[in-house]
Image (cartoon, rainbow, N blue to C red; front, side, top):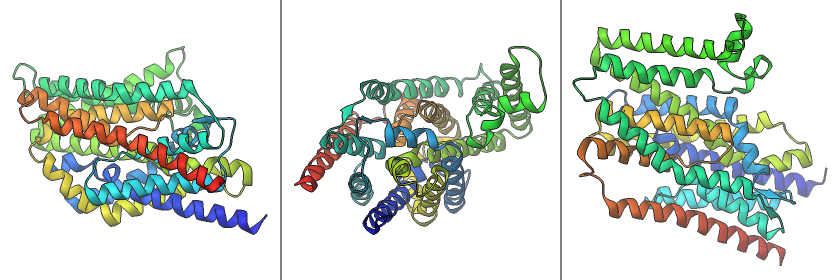
Length: 390
């Protein structure tokens, strides 16, 4: 193999690791457990340790879907060369680093997606309109769906006529059913999901075997949470909140690793240097290191904003965050955790305070920053590739 090609791939791999580190160090590494830290359910250092481990696990076991979409699903007709991959990753990571340093809410999903599309167009690629429509629908609907679910949950949890040993176990049961149907790479031989693996391990007759196992896991989860809350209400809520934080951290690794390693996937097909699982492993490792080295400061900072939420509103925030993140993983859509969590916080805040603590100006600024992130990344990537062509 040509030494220049190897050097370019190595440079792209280093840029990918840097991107993964930035993701782990940024909001994706800090957000999942920030509500739990703000509610005094876990310490900052323990949260950073867990979010790194769980993010790594999510990246390795579920990261392939979004990675393939970012690497090969955004542009038709061309395959990104090593130089283009380097441009994409440096722009995405650079903008994220600037956002972390300056405090601007720059979203990783928007910067990387904009960079890939910009580079692809500069190389003469064709747009994949169906994928753009899918991504656009998820991005536009996330604030309404996430905020709406959070609003509903936050409206119900404090009500005296809906006891928490009823409402919270119902939420736990729904989460349990979703977990039973998550797709994992290591379960592919057994059907891909815990429910399908359950039917293989304990054969159940009938066409509804998977649904039966899913419902069974949901009922079991609800029963355990109900028992825990009845035994110790405050402790039960805290443990359920920590479980949700763990699921969100896992989902963050699964969805965000694709933004770091997805651009490398076209090179894997072209050069046959490494396997996709090895690339996912490296990306997960980068997220883990980023979470362990820099996320504690970010978690502590973000948790101060969550401190007023309390365990119930934090639960209302994390449930839709988990559901939307896993929906994006299934669809193979790059999604911003910043957008997901901010939307859920706003929804729960409107339910609890009537919107008194929600600043329209700050929300407008945040949305403008998200849109600006995509446009800026697209322009920089397109212009950089034109300059390289010259």
